[in-house]
Structures are given as C-alpha cells and as structure tokens.
Amino acid sequence: MPKVLVFGSMNIDYVYRVDHFVKKGETLTSKSLAVFPGGKGVNQSIAFAKAGLEVYIAGQIGEDGRFLLETLDAAGVNHDGVRITAEERTGNAIIQNDDAGDNCILAFPGANFRIAEEMIDAVLVGFEAGDYLVLQNEINSVEEIAEKASEKGMIVVLNPSPVNERITPELLASADWLFVNEVEAAQIVGNETDNDVLRAALQKQFPGKHIVLTLGEQGADYLSDGVCLHQDIFPVKVVDTTAAGDTFTGYFLAGWMRGRAPQECLRLAARASAIAVSRPGAAPSIPEAVELSDITG
Ligand code: RIB
Image 1: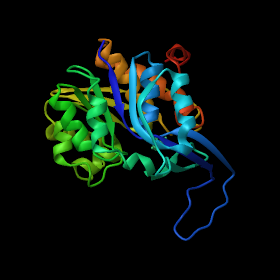
Image 2: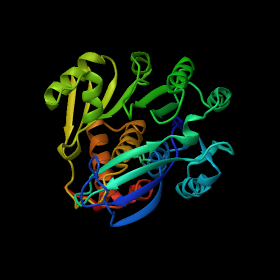
Image 3: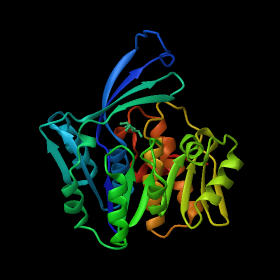
C-alpha cells in the first residue's frame, strides 16, 4: 500500500454559533464560541488515518498550536514532518456556523505561510514513486511542492481551496487528482453555475485527470475521461458542515487506494461526510471507519 503525505495547513478553529452570517457594517453577538483543531491539512490527514491508511502530515505551527499534535497522535497520524516555529503564531480560522449548519470561514495563515524551502526537500526525501501527496492551498510554496513530488513520481492530489491567484495553470497541470467543491470548480472554469455545464467544463479543461466534484446537498461526482458517476448525499440532521469536504477527500481516496470501484468510493465518502456534518467542529467531527455502517440507504 502506498504512503500518503498530506503537506498542508494546521489551524486553530474558532467556531462562532450565529443565527445568520454577519453582514457588512453589522455587529452581531454570537450564541457560543467553541475552539477546535482544524485546518484542511489536519482534517484531511485525520480522515485518511480514520479510514485506515498510513498517513504522514507535514506543516508548521507556532507554540500555541501544540495541542494539534495531540489530536494527530490520537488519530494515528505521523507528524514527524511538523515543525514548530517560535516566530509566528499557528494559523487560525474564524468560522461562523449558522442554524442550518452552514458556515463561512475567514482564515489567517500564520505559521502555515512560513514553511522554509529546505523543509520541502527534507520532507519529500521520505517518500517515493507511487506514494500520494495531498495538497490544499493554505500553505506557501504549493506549486513547488507539487512540482518536486511529481518529479519523484509521486501521485499529486490537489484540493485547490481556497481558489486564488496561487492556483496557477502550472499547479493545476501538475495534479493527477483534483478535489473541488462547486464554488471552487466555478472559479476555476469561469463562473459556471449549472452543474452539467460545470461537469462538462471540468472534463474538457482537465483531460486525463481524476476529478471529484462535491456539490453540497446535491451530492458528489467522480469525473474522468468519458466517465461521470454521481452519488447523492445520505440525508442527516446537519449541525456543522465544516470539514465535510476534507472527510470526503480522505475516505474517497482511501477506498481508491484499496482498489474499490469509483462508485463505491463515492458511496463510502458520502457516508463519512454525512456523519461529519451531523457533528460540531472540524477534525473532531470525522468518523471512524466502523461508524460508516450507521448510515444506511
Ligand atoms: O475545510 C475546513 C477547514 O478550513 C477548517 O478546519 C479551517 O481551519 C479551514 O482551514
């Protein structure tokens, strides 16, 4: 079985419960504040580990983020590739979570954006051709990391989130897999809102790639040359959608790496995400594999 390296963000999530998202010029009192381990890198590495894979995380935190290492230990994620810097605080996210369970996220990169160039080589030396590199867009040097991993023959999985000027055509081209939600997909292919148009545009723009498109309440698709598979969601009472996409990524790829058919991978990932959205928080909401049988349908 190949190894999985998640080179990604590590955040402290401040989750504010609100009855609506704060508007321009408005001051809003939140109903509660909870602090959770998060960051797409942490969440995705935990999803891989809970799905039963051997997973390694590389990233950077400040002294204030040491508790994230305990969370990774508890999930069985190897964090030898995490550095602690005294010069910057840990990245954090201010998350508004409304009564429908929806969220909006404001992220401060902190130590995530201070990854030294020599660290990239030092981390990648432990991996070889056929191993998976999983990247999001919440750390610096993603293009360089993808390029170096690709040169080694690693399989590059990119979750281009958030989409901004750092998601370059070169970075997209270097990925073997893309995991995008409908908002990110629309930003990448040019603001298409219709799902069928989005699917066709992704397939046209990225021939030869594996693409997983998550569509919120409308389910998710696996797309590749000439293939378009769909999976509906498993309906549950939604508490907090944070990390649903991260959970989907980990469980889908875990299925794929075990040789499951893509339709079955979609199903596994949809089950895992259904559990994640029914619980509060990011990393703590990701289920163990044994829990997936609780979701039927
Ligand atoms: O994908 C969810 C994550 O995005 C949160 O945990 C937050 O830290 C942001 O990185």
